[in-house]
Length: 160
Image 1 (cartoon, rainbow, N blue to C red):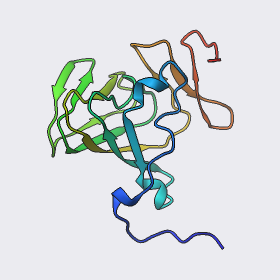
Image 2 (cartoon, rainbow, N blue to C red; image 1 turned 180 degrees about the vertical axis):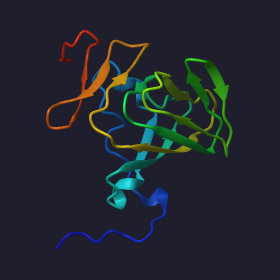
Image 3 (cartoon, rainbow, N blue to C red; image 1 turned 60 degrees about the vertical axis):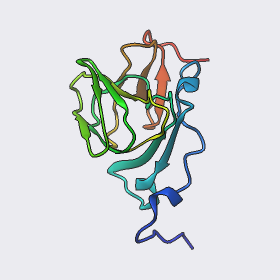
Image 4 (cartoon, rainbow, N blue to C red; image 1 turned 90 degrees about the vertical axis):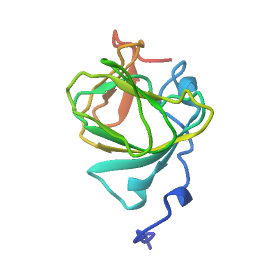
């Protein structure tokens, strides 16, 4: 018998993802201070994902990136991260939110430069295929024929 989908849960009771990222090295190590709890998966959501994400002091949310097909939204619950976009840096506080429209080309990331954890909700759709540009790094994200996320060098070579 399949496990029953819960009606409601305490978000902090959801087990964090076992790995902080699917990035290959040397990028994987850069996000080790990030912990995600996949809240949408608990309820079997297929059209969009919701993560409760914690950034330890000094951590980043992701490599600075922009999606071709997926929208993203963040809402700051605790802490004071800096949002880094193509326009520069924007300090954020609890209660603030930001959205990133697909295909805008505006690369973004959160950086925790404080001595306290940052907690935020991130919401994004799951449109596939979705190409991800990383303007500051030699990596790009795409999907294989089966729809699985893969990472390549910008010139198309696979990572070892």
